[in-house]
Image 1 (cartoon, rainbow, N blue to C red):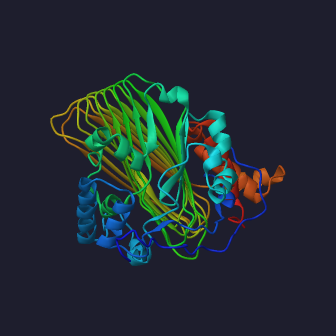
Image 2: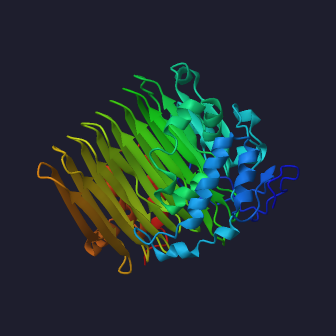
Image 3: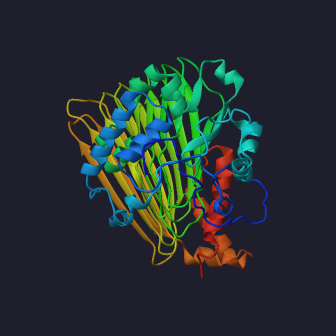
Length: 490
């Protein structure tokens, strides 16, 4: 592979077309696994080849026509990645099965996202139409971005929101068109050396969203991005930065899917949120990766005085997920919240949790985590709460509930709470329960199948959290749980 652009790589190898008969469209993308398990043969205009080196990074930067400072940023991040060992704390040995030299780090049909649906290439359009993107955009979104492998294929924001001064573009456009604003916050919440996978993302990132909401603007409808991995042996490394200026409010939703391949796929994103004084950001994720995906994501928000950042995180699918959304509560009376749902089926490990760093007086954090382990699936909660010395009036509540469906299911809880000083309040509650055989038997006597009874029990377990999702996501979450319960009993 060379860094020159004179001969970009040709057609990428893709798995055979796995398209099933067309099914009724979902109102929300990225939920039903049966709708995500398909791929198309695509001819890529830009292909960085297989493996990671300085030439890979230079190729990506040159394709994007980036400023010299950004190439320098990427190259320093690459050296950081190469110098850091795989994490051993907050980690699992399954990470050793990632072969970085076999991954394709950049694949794209083109650099410019389409602004109208008709302009999207037919093969990509068909992908997103099957997954419901146009329908949801018409129904309830203020803006949508659809990323296909390394770049956004489609990006649109409604004019009424744009007229309010809201910026919603992909990260490449954000860097090019709003460099001063983007660079001011870029890499400040999550530094390059935060962890090995944050360093990897910093070296090869492409795609993701850049959002800026001006002071006092409250975006009435949510913005959404949808991330689709289509190619085999691929790594997706989107970079998202959301800034809510003073008194602004915004909801952002993301959905993710990938087809099932026999080889491993890597997804390693970085998400930075900045809520200035009195601002509110709500970030909602429903991931439904195929079970060959390593999903290793770093997400963190910075909340200034009286600001609020809320993560609503639903993790279903993937071989291994390691994700711990966090909030640094920098300003007085800032608030942070993480609401998490994780479902681990056979061959899956959902290693999820939250981090709350109290760095100012009278800050409040709330963590609610619910996990379901099915078959031989494993769910792990890891939490970190810190209250600094010299502060006063900080409060935290942490609640972790786990549900085991089978005798071979596994769940672990690793909370770490550090409180310095004597004027704070914190509480932690954890519970583990098993589906009642008597209850399942009772429901079967009322005409339900065992799978239906299990599904009803699981949905009841998460109902209080699912009710905080937008209605469309809540409905699809129930559908997905129904699907996961099929074949997991007996």
